[in-house]
Image (tube, rainbow, N blue to C red; front, side):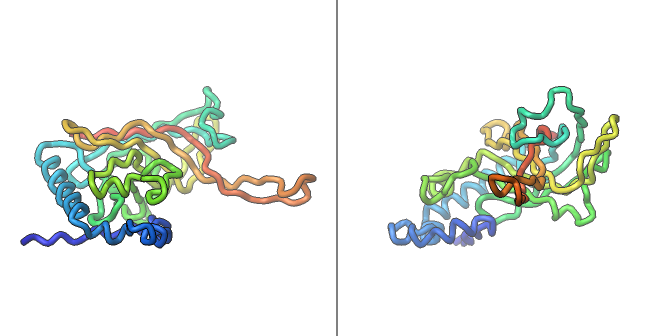
Length: 242
């Protein structure tokens, strides 16, 4: 008999566990459901699909597939909208060759990014490859327990997770004009899907940086408040190298 150890919950989803008391009262405790035959069946199907994908040359989020990650970096927007980046703003293409290495046993799937090539030296690798984290994700604002999210649906069918979120530490960039893209944490969001013929598919997505923005804290402007906001700064795309 093969024993399948139940998946560990990703620490990033601790908020879901905090809300599980309401689910228990409603008779739908996620911890009990996770150990159910349906959950174990999903785990076995997912493991089998990964093995099959690797053997058939499908794209996968593991060491079996290299990815070409192209980041088109622009100066950060002055607002939270990418539409406010000027059309004539300078752009720099950063081409990377990477591997998405999944850490087994977490739900939603997550792991580290291994950098194979970075000719521009855009990424700050001082902390090692393990410092670059990625995670498959639902749409922002989705509550898996209260809004029928993909986590509950995943107990009966393999979750689809429409987004892959990636965090990178960067060294900054210089444009010919002399302006500089700031070094720091870069957030990459890529649409994610699965294909029966191609395996994992990552599409064109967005880049953003966190910046401290100062606002008036009162009507007359006597006091100020610093707010950390995500500011769009370009686009990203990942293609499997098969």
